[in-house]
Image 1: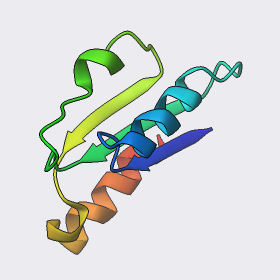
Image 2: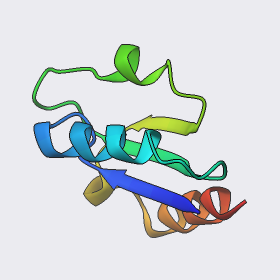
Image 3: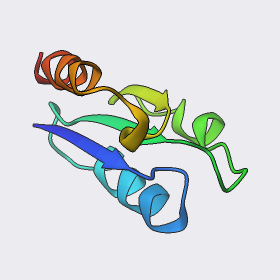
Length: 77
């Protein structure tokens, strides 16, 4: 199962990501997107998890439609 967490640096996003990282299923993949507007960078905390597919620093609303489609295709693999 693949998961996408938007706002992964915020309180709720980090807790959701950690809950997904701790799933018992072996094939849980997590991609986290955040623009880091809060000034908190969760990547050092996330690096310990093997099922973090990637962390994307960016704002989904500022991505082009093509970039969002490409991101979805890469996430599905």
